[in-house]
Image (cartoon, rainbow, N blue to C red; front, side):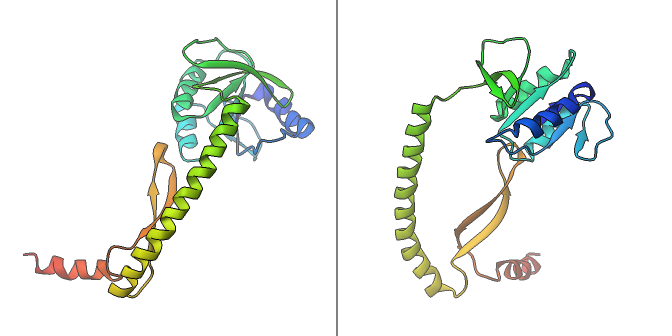
Amino acid sequence: MIITDKANLQDVKNSIKDHEFVGYNIKQIISLDKVDDENVVVMRYHEQIVDWAVRQWIDECLFCIEGNYASIVDIIEEFIEMGITSQYELYKRQERYTNTVTHVGKYTTLTRTVKIVNYRDAFLKRCLDIVGGLVGCFITLILMCTFGLAIKIKDPGPVFFSQTRIGQNGKKFKIYKFRSMYMDAEDRKKKLLKQNT
């Protein structure tokens, strides 16, 4: 997402159009000032911005700000704790985080994140992810055959149970697990609660 102000909004929009921000999927532009643009959300307080970000799948945030907004420091601190990489044109450097100069569109930015991964590390991690995923799939296939058959024999119905749950930073995700309850578990629970006097 991009956080900007009224003074820089048009420049940001032109930059998105001109440079196309290759490799980026811009989810939202947020303005700290009131603007008349239906594609831009106005949020003046850092609590609003952080609250919005925790409910979205945001990987990076680009700050295009003119002037000194004190609340930006708090936003960046919370974003880094959430694993959201923060990029901005000019800002006070703090050494406890990894800093590097990068380019986002036409902007030269100072990127702050907990760790910046080089191409070698990213490649090794990707290889490990693939190998781990294949091993996990193989183990899951064996378990699925074993437990799936047992579930089907014990109680006809679907083998898997799905549910939406809340994860880190309030983000929703869907889980799938082997069904361990009867299909009518909720109805049975109501009947049992009536007996509980």
